[in-house]
Length: 206
Image (cartoon, rainbow, N blue to C red; front, side):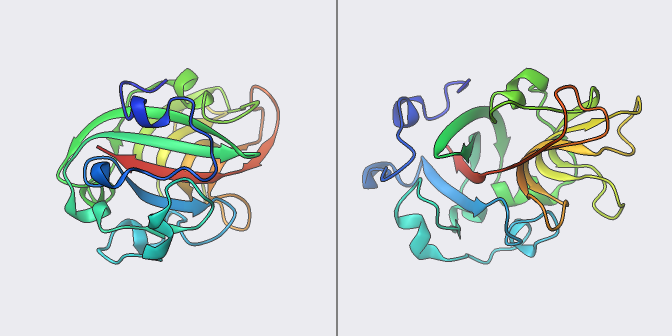
């Protein structure tokens, strides 16, 4: 489900040794790559809310497994976003129509709904699972000051009929320390059982 985002670039994309053509770097650019089992881009990392690059050398090739954050994160206007999650060397993509002055602004402005729905987020990971309630998706999703789940960009699930105490997510940049910061985490009556799917995450903008 690409929502017309970067369709030409990532249709039939192989997850290794793919490089964005230089002529298209400005409009279609990898902004963030990160390991989802490391701490670099967890929810509370300042990299989500500052204008500091991270390992710019890693941005030279698009879809490898090297963590990076490029200046496009804060200096490029956004009309569309493409999320990639690589699990077992296969990348799944999800497009979002989203307008902002920059991705930085999106991650500093509090919760913003993406309204993609459960099925769209399920398409990002193999054999997905999520608790059946809450199902709220968007930017800065959840309360990172609580002991419950929060996610920088993704969907939350809960076994209670609210979003106050979520235990599961699919997406990027979670608060779930010592486990996975992106991919799929599910527990406590999730619809397809417990999950701790550790992946590699990508964010692209147009």
